[in-house]
Image (cartoon, rainbow over all chains, first blue to last red; front, side):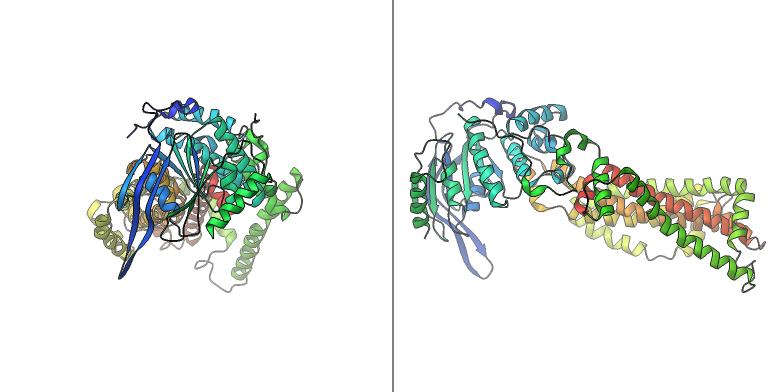
Length: 258
Length: 307
């Protein structure tokens, strides 16, 4: 297990010592949830996957395919019932922004730094630098209720980045936003990850989002979730949503989802 | 190859209550309050409320309750003057006002005693209630052990306990503080516990994934979440506390508005007794309003949640 990186190094995150080992490895992972007076539900069955360092992998699948379970396993919030799982420290960004309403953007973004023992001014300084990079300059002192949904999601992303964990698990990060804001934030995230490369596991319902952002798209089957297809996305960035290659890939992924 | 995303204001959020675009000024809660006041006053129709319009509407807002009070007082005065009731039983407002003025020295010196007892008792109740709320929140068995006792304690008739406490603890400050704590502790405790329990579990889970200990999750998420509850409890408690202090004095004291009233009534100085009660009522309003102001000032995000 790679030790947790100093959050202060988040700006220039160098590769961890054993850079040849993948960031996340699942081998034959199965996860079941027991039910009262009924057979257990199998959320994930025999899932194997490997995610390289700084690779962006999108996971698409129908509702109930165990996508969120997969992320929680990688983040260590759940344990697999069968199989092996090894992952670098991972931070979860849920669909709801879950910002603390009494803190301003700086304090919210720097929450993990503060929890790790840094002083408030130090955490705020670090957050300020990142919020600036993420296009939130001028909104550092706004509370969540004073920010739009898209801005809140960006602050939540900053908070996830500043946790200093090398792996980011994004659980439908833009699912609660309107279509226009969503497209805007997808471009923004692609951009942010170009400048701050991380290992990313992105769970989404949106096939287009998956292809625009990811290096690789995995398709999970209906429950019990299994990896049924895998599409490498060898397109240059920034990607055009309407380019023939992307549209062709989208058709193929949608076909696999059926 | 790519340029940084500009700090755009999302188009869907162009509503008058928002203050995003005002940038650094959002550090103080005043713009939020003002924006909200404006929106309420204008019914959200116009975006340029003049300062005079705001001041004028404040005046209108204050006039309505003041007018009601004036009308009620006038009816009362007329009712007594028409000889419908003996002014020694129900003194007219004019007599009460005269007493407030004539007895101002006497009233004030006794008022400070009662106010001190009430405030001191609330302070003690706050400390005890917040401490116990935290402990109960962490320990289910403590909750099971203590909660029934506390609920039972609220059913004890105070008129029964107050003289006993005076007999037990003497005629000084102690029995008054005991009664005030007894009546104001419970509302603060219950509201605080509710606030702690009402914390979004996803928020707690999130800070735990960010590495928070159980204690950090309490201090950074649950405790701030309970603060509006603390204020709600305190607002209820101040009113109870004044009644408690008054009752404590009534049951045996050397000073205080309760004693003043107790002595005034047998001497048929009912206007003076009513003046003392008026003072107490005014103080209750002041404390209640002050707490509301303090809450808006200290917890500005609760305003945003309410709109």
